[in-house]
Amino acid sequence: MNYVYPGNFSIPQAVALGHLVDAAYNQYTQFQAGQAWVPPAGYNIVATFDAQEPWKVGLLDLVHFFPIPTPTVPFGFVATNGPDTFIVIRGTLTPLEWLDDATIQPVAFQGTGSPWGQTTQGFKSLYDSLMPQITAALTTIKNAGGLNTVYVTGHSLGAALALLVTAGVFIQFGVKPVAYTLSGPRAGDPVFAAQCDAAGLTIWRIFNTEDIVPTLPLAAVQVDTANAGMHGLTPITQAIPALIALFPIGYQHVGYPIAVTFHADTIADNHNQDTLYNSL
Image (cartoon, rainbow, N blue to C red; front, top):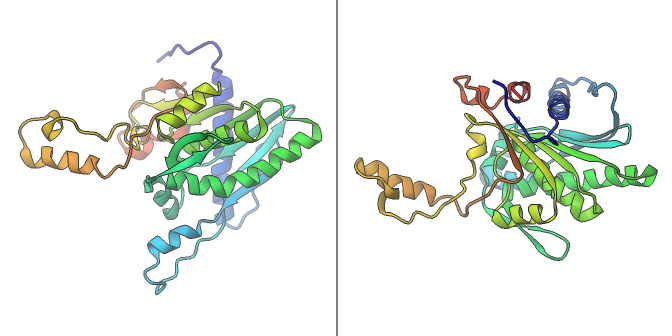
């Protein structure tokens, strides 16, 4: 199907960034296999960044009888190509990272002296681990000749982190990155979304309408009518408000929606980023 997009949205740029995210996934795969990572051709790798998340051990380690290792694993890289800078973040691959996706308790995302709303504890934990490494790489680039156009991209969990990193780069460097996110969940509350809009950040939110991930975390958690406005099937209609109540707050998407539609019969395939960017 031929889609019509805004004139300043670049399909070639979106596809190129999708290939970079593929390289970040390969970075992890080759690390696991004990192989040297082969960076994408034509890009100068300024730094790779990784994460170690010891906070999760307390959740999964039962009184320390069964210690669970939390090795440092690669999450992406900062690269340059000509005058442009690229921050690339992969999505969920490890069991502990699935816990990041599910840890939706709201925590503050602090800006320059003023609150930038809230994000989830899982996303903020990873952001706190990755952002100092990204900041160091951007400082190196800035000192070597300045930050020109900065692109931030990521898929799935990486898309949520890309939104936080985009805000973080603006806060720390005064540079307005251009973000292309792929198949991302909601990363912040309405205040966070409003702050991104007020800052004038360019964010393209690319997603498949049949993908479940962009529907999470929930946008609204308040149920104003009995049985969520549904009738009949009483046990089910009573269970739905109880389930919704498990979500602490409502979250909101950020950026201009760039939608495609494909149906591949499985949740994983509907979430596939290669199919997504090839469908543009």
